[in-house]
Image (cartoon, rainbow, N blue to C red; front, side, top):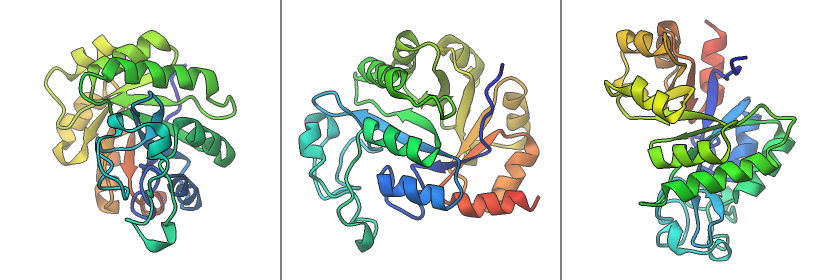
Length: 246
């Protein structure tokens, strides 16, 4: 049976309304009506999977340096909320386990994008897949793992073949179908700015196509009219409201 995918996914939680990849972001995504969220995962020096988009912590915390050079105990001491707004001061970089617990409480589905450090794709894919296999709540819809990194997707497949995978790209390459098949992917995630009607129709006829990061309601309506499966958005409330009116 084919999975039932969401149409609207909160990007990095709800990155337009809360600090990205934080527990506060998950709570606000839920408040804004999201049923699914997308979260970024990478490994610390001691191999703990944490929610963090950038390789370096500089942009979204009060620390400095690369995540793979920091232990989990050092990383969790950083403030990951004050950069966004004063009311989020004290937010921390969550571990995958902390995120899973809150996702269960909030009843949110999730897409996990693997963001490995260079040459760390296989380990990132393995650790994340094994963690999800052991701890993903049965009450939630099955998770989806995505990545631009082929090694991470292959390792995730080897560790947990039952977890669905998606190929992440910028512009859709000419050999997208061959890549997706080689990695056992069930969907393609692409930059909406590189999509047109003919390309959406071509891809969507073969695999579900999701687009990031769509924050303009009119663009979301256009993409869905072309046959898109889902959008990632920083403002799930705005996009949901626009789609409900169509």
